[in-house]
Image (tube, rainbow over all chains, first blue to last red):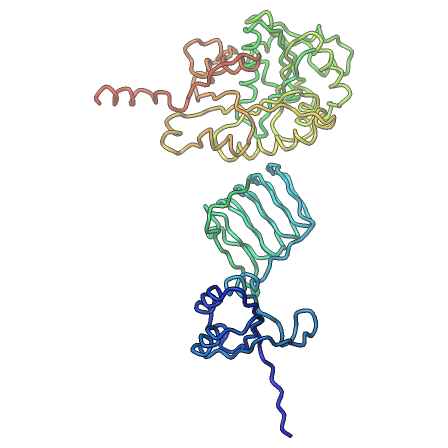
Length: 200
Length: 270
């Protein structure tokens, strides 16, 4: 006897509305070319023919052995590819020790914070913020910033002195707009925020 | 009980003493009893600006340390019956100040006067800290230049952390005077506009004083510029004094006022 074991990707779908089914596959059939489609519901000639023309392998009413919660060969992939894209995006690390402050940091004042900070006011020339976590400042920064967090978002004037993970950030890249400054592969990446951000 | 107002700036030479003299006289002219106190011990100048230098017999150190009665040390101004002056000691230095004595002195002045104006020394050292310690309000004098703004910012920061009122959980009311505005330079963009300064310091404005050459002469003569009816700066100080007394006075845009002789000639030909 000759046996072979395959790991097949299976897409399980419940058949309720014929037209919806065809419309969905018409749009997305390319995603299922390497999948086995398991259709639960009444056997339907029209759909069978349709799937044949698209050369999609399929079976009707097959109970699959389910292993684990959502791991293994039987994992159904989310039906809408658009949704899939969004869910696979890496999520931001959300930290819980966030502090929100609406306080003007005046000259000579120093703010030392171990966690994250959302500052809703200015940092004046001569003021300074030293922070271990992530930093977001919604108004102009004229003072000095020392940040060792995941990222910072700020808008700095030419007077500002900004050091991110021990490296001085050239503030000619930081003017006028809200910028996101982060460390990616040991390089400081500055991305200007594209849209006007409303902080309400 | 009177209101104690400290006139501060952080940086020296921006016009604190001139402002103190003019506002003090302006308040007195508005019919309120007012005393101006020079806290710049060792470097007193306010007596000269008020034209009272030859009349100082006792100063505040005599009052605090040597048992002289406050009323003996107070000097009545000839310019207004409502204005009195308490001089700083010229022979001592700021180390003679101490919180308990100052509190006693200020409390005795508050009983007799509606407004007690304190002229703070430049800098942010002990002399400054003692001046602001028992103040209810502060008038911050700033020039439209970055160094003055930064020093004022620092002075406000100290005011917000070290005054007795703040320690009691209240707030010191702060008002800004922008002094020495040069209208032509503001219009040409060489001088910071008042909106920029207000944005940085974020405290309410109480007056804008244009630059005026007459102030130097007024100081030399010991006659505050507020007595000069034709001076733009004098009129501006008059409006500030009225605002301090609680009157509603519209702001005059000193920055766009006619820029002098050349501009008038230009206007004639256009």
